[in-house]
Amino acid sequence: MAEEFKVTPWEVTGDIDYNVLMKKFGTTPIDDALIDRISKYGTPHPMLRRGIFYTHRDLGALLDDYDKGNQFYIYTGRGPSGNTHLGHIMPWIFNKWMQDTFKCKMLFQMTDDEKFLFKDLTLHDTRNMAYENALDFVALGFDPDNTKIIVDTENIKTLYPLALRVAKKVTFSTAKAVFGFDGESNIGRIFFTTLESAPAFLPSEIEGKPTRVIVPCGIDQDPHFRVTRDVAPGMGYPKPTMLYCKMCPGLNGGDKMSSSEENATIYTTDTPKQVKKKVGRAFTGGCVSIEEQREKGGNPEICAVFKYNYYLFEHDDAKLNEMADKCRRGEILCGECKVALTQKINVFLEAHQAKREEAKEIVKQMTFEGFKW
Ligand code: TRP
Image (tube, rainbow, N blue to C red; front, top):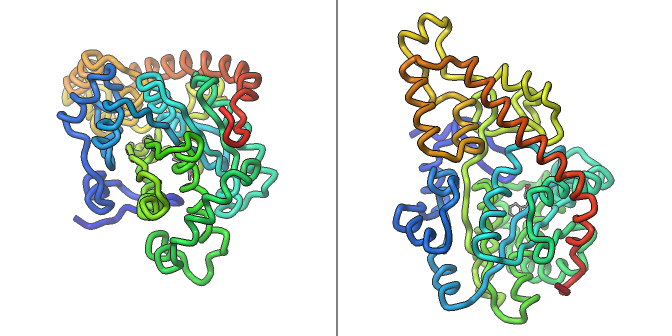
C-alpha cells in the first residue's frame, strides 16, 4: 500500500492506515486474549473494546509484575501549544480509567520547552498554556493525592540528571534517523527527546527500586519512546510499557482533530452555540438529498458525527450499533444525528467547564516538587 500518510510527534497528515503504522513501528496488537486478561482487573474501557487503544509494547510483562504485587506508575503528557480540545482529552479519559482500575500513581508532563522549540511561541506563551491545559487534565478527576504535574521548565532540576544520562546514550545519528533532523534543526530539538524520556525513569528514582511505568498515549509519540526503551536497560531501568491509541478524528472527516482546523475542532471552553455551529457543519456519511438518503441509507463508516459517538460520546455498544444500522437503512438523517451529538457534547462540556473552575484550586495540590509524595 502506498504510504501517503505521515505520523510523527510533530506532524500527522494523510489518511492513516493504523495497521501499516503498527507494523512500521513494530508494536503488538491488543487482541481479544489481552482484553480478556485486562477484564480481570475491571470492565475494559470502551476505547479498548473498540480498538481505539489498539496496540502496545510490553503490556503483558507489566501485568505479570502487577500480578506479583508490583505496583506500576502511569505517565503521560501534553505539549502545551494551544487550547485543549476533545482530541487531547480523549487519551486522558483513558488514563483516568487506568488510574481508577489499577490505583496507580501518575505523572503528567507538560513539555512547555518542546513547544517553545518546535513552534513559533515564546516561553511565556507555552508556560501559560501549560497552566491552562493542566486545568483540563485535572478536571477529569485524577486522584489529587496520587497525581503530579511536571512542568519541564519548572521541574528541570529533577529531570535534568535523567535527561543527561539519556543524552549520553543517544547519538546524533540515531536522533536524525528517528526524527528526521538535519543540519538546519535547532539543537534544542535534538536534545528534547531526553526530556520526554526522563519521567519514564522517575518512578524508579522515587521508589528507590526498579519500577514499571505504563504510558498510554497517541501512537505519534512512539519515536520518543523507541529511543527511551532502547536506553532503559543500560541505565538500569525497566523499559516503559506503551499503550497507544489512534488519533481522535476531526469533525471535517480528517483523521486528526487539529487546532489548524478551528471549525472542525471542539475546544473544552467552547460555548453551546459554538458546538452547535461546528457539529452542524461536520462531515457526514449522508447523501445529497433526503429522498436519496431515505432510499439508499447513509455510511456511518466515514461519518465524523458517528465517529464522535464511537470514540467518545456513546459508551453503550447496543445503542451505537442501532445508530449505525438505522443510518444504513435510511431511518435517521444527518440532521437528527447532529442534534443528538451536539446535545451530548454540550452536556459533557457543561460539567467539564464546572470542574475546570474547581481545578484552579485542586491543581495546586498536584504541583510536582521533586521526589516527595
Ligand atoms: N510530546 C507530547 C506532545 O506534544 C507531550 C508529552 C510529553 C507526552 N510526555 C509525554 C505525550 C508522554 C504522551 C506521553 O503532546
